[in-house]
Length: 556
Image (cartoon, rainbow, N blue to C red; front, side, top):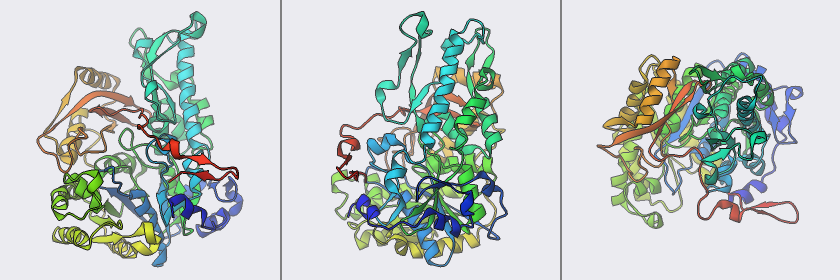
């Protein structure tokens, strides 16, 4: 069966029963029908129900068109932990409509390791993305209104405004636009553009805020641009942050759903890891840690992107650290990194696997840079040969890294019980040695270099003239102490998507730097990465439909 057929075959538990498993009072839930609910922020601050709650981070090797299944493994692992007698909750990001209708067709796991109701989660869900979009665009409207104003003007220089608009759809035509055309009544013409909602600084702020007041303060700290006399302007100067917070008052509350086996799941926040910080909300993670024995969470794309940002940005902001790190790999993805063509990946071939294993090797090394111990999960596909699986297992054993095969798409939690045992053992003996890769006091260039050279494996970092000007601007604004959130292709450890495996002797080029002062980080943009994706030649939306009974078809 397809993913959507499997999802529809399951009788879901009432969300009130799922909440009861976590000790949540039914009267405290804000229900969105029978199977979705928002949980009050107060549960994040409650005394943990378990003496030493464990946080498990799931990451992956560099993504390929063949797919790695990081979300599927996260869900399967959480289900498996419950099967071996532990109490586990999985905490994930919300899918963005752009990829759902673009290339992926859905992002709620797969097979017998899914979060439900999958159609709702993949589409509008509880309206969080819409709230982020509205709050972001409210600020954009207030900026243009202030430029137009005669009596209320801050004297904003339109040429310096860095704040774009956002929408939750892949639409390359909106990357660069001109607004304000049509005469004086329609505003002041200026060049701007759109980013996808998941890349909005408001989304990042939502994910990194600890409470409503923190959210409001961070929104006020959004850098907008300069006045004509070179004074910086922030959202608080436009008096926009209060109204923006009002629009996010419900979106900040975590969403409770369930997995296909009835395991509790928080699905909250949805930034991409190649163009944003790529982790779910601090509030959802800390709520789960207050209510659960084991919290399993994932960070977007490969360890070089989502996990690095999870550790250097989210853990620092939240004051948390993982007790174990699971690195997801697949036979076919490693063969792709070894140079095998996409159409041939189902054919067993040890030679390409041996060439591509270096990508796994580098990610293992990267985990150790944070003083964390890696666990490798081989996400099994039916086309994998036993010889190929044995090769990866033997490689990991020689490297001293625990490894298990996860057959979670086909078997759900039962397919990850060996992995769950390893995770429990590793988390129990985890020493509190985690340390970020860089200090906030480091210079901006030094922070970028530490990530590019240590995590990506670059020889050096180069800066365009435009990026150098922004570095000086950052210094003048006193924002050198912010974290860095590098926007980079997910397809390669380098900033060149064509360099697979473990590239060497390359230079990372920072072409520009965006300031996300509210989120608490700077965004060096490398290579050709875009913050507004485009649709593929054959978008997934061509196959998504609805029948006369209201049944959705084509989501997978």
